[in-house]
Image 1 (cartoon, rainbow, N blue to C red):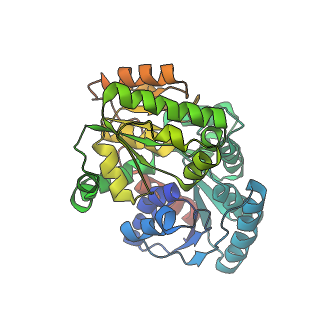
Image 2: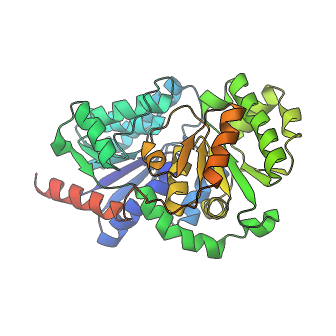
Amino acid sequence: MKIAFILGTRPEIIKCAPVIRECEKQGIPFILIHSGQHYSYEMDQIFFEELELPKPHYALEVGSGSHGEQTAKILERVEKVLISEKPDVALVQGDTNTVIAGALAAAKLHIKVGHIEAGLRSYFREMPEELNRLVADVLSDFLFVPTKNSEKILLGEGYSKEKIHVVGNTVVDATLEHIKISEKKSNILKELNIEPKKYFVITAHRPENVDKPTRLKSILESLVEVSNKYKMSVVWPIHPRTQKMIEEFGYLPITKKIHNLNIIKPIGYFDMLSLQSNAKLVLTDSGGMQEESCIIGVPCVTLRDNTERPESIDVGANKLAGVKTKEIISSIEEMIAKKGGWKNPFGDGTTAKKIIKILDGSIKGQ
């Protein structure tokens, strides 16, 4: 069996890492195809280095662009690699333009497609990730779903049960494996002069938040209220897109009203994991951070009107707040009052082994 991993963003690198390592352990041939959808050192290359993963065999360097332009470039360049390499299966993870282009290129070449983290739905089609998920699931031969809830969604949409495999989420494998390493390797708290449980972490990058002036302004104004109410540091590893939009909309003066705000550049995986695990609370619009916070026992408030990770809400680890100040403040109050202790719904940390076992059995059985 020969596997092609098609990835292009930092979450994909992190979540594919356990499966790549499992291939290495079992001596299974694989190639890494990196689209270059994320293309800066801080957003991309640093993760290969920190996680001690092989350098991509193919770096497609597609860069930025409109959704159509970026997806087309990935499709064209991935296709050439797949024709040359002839893998038995192509693995894609998540919901990015890399996922939809990679899955489409493989399917058209009659190469089996495995979608890791299949079956997630926000039911919000203005979100490009939602469209990518839907199409990737249609194209896939192996639907590796993280939970029974995701399986139920796919069965309800008419997918064959034979295609669906409830394996958990590789984010659990990655988080459990790396949390202790981050404690040893990261000095981020010392560098920022902050103490455990005495600061909030925020991340915001989704276009439906940062590209819309009213929503971005509301998030910033909410942070002013949060900093006034709780008198704690607010640490913000800021996405380049978010920084750009704050400047374009003329919102820098609002950020100066946020007391104890510490805006920093994007940081490495171990630093982010350490920052997240020691926070009093996480404010985010990231799906991955909703999962990670749930796994490590840190309360999370999600700055969105919907989520494709309802399991984190169901167990009490997460609260949907939207972007209005009143709802954000009340959600924070509710979440920091919790003692934690919720059960992790995303698996037991053996997802990578399950995925490889399923693929190996299927390919050998052909």
